[in-house]
Length: 90
Image 1 (cartoon, rainbow, N blue to C red):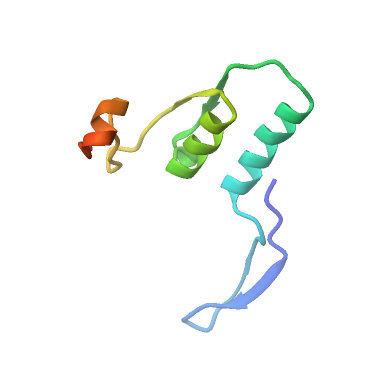
Image 2: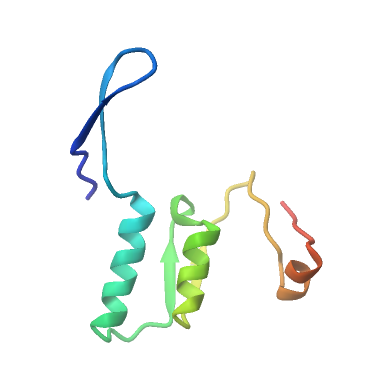
């Protein structure tokens, strides 16, 4: 759950609230907690909302795999070879 504890005024002068941590930071903290508690898992299944390079790198850094939907406007490399060549696809 995201707690929006910080108030601010947007560019139109409207009072709004935001969270001090992002949804992605919360997701990474949940994964980190599962690893620290030694919960046995190999894959992280996530919604496209969390499909970001930073999250993917965090997961693979911890020797885990991920399954995620990718939005149609995102670019990605289909293999390590493609990544090293700079070949990105939609």
